[in-house]
Image (cartoon, rainbow, N blue to C red; front, side, top):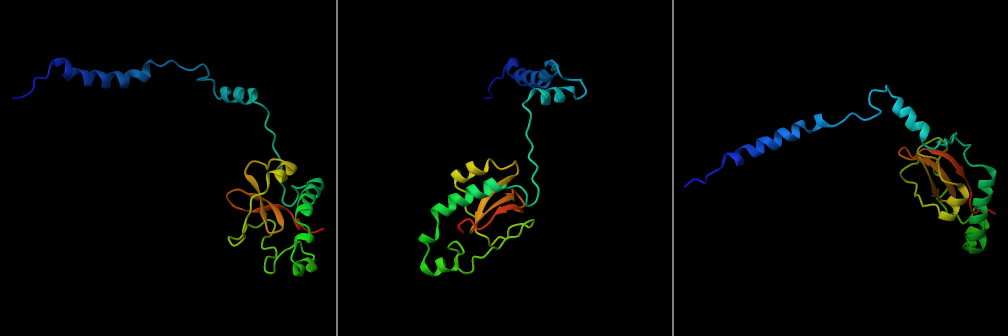
Length: 161
């Protein structure tokens, strides 16, 4: 025996499909439509002004930032906490073979080990510009471009007194 399907049940899916297809044609036009891009200009004017920071190769960190960061690391990691052999070298507790492996204007090699910069240091440096981040590599704080890992500026020899 075949089940009986009423004419209503046959037309319901067709009616719903037609309703969905026509639904967008009943929508009203937004106020800004047809103004030739004026909406975008008005939106930009209404939002807060954006501060753009020019990031020049080797010229991002100022002397005050360098001094504050070196003071932070110098007091925490002075030669007093180094093994005697490394303290004599006056290189900020840098183990042999950990010499600088990066170059300004070049991407970081994949062999360089990166460490996060403590929040207290980020506060002293200020928020990095959009598209950049701070990292610590050995005894240096680096400003690198996100994506390319290109070194833009550096504060070197953090633990040297």
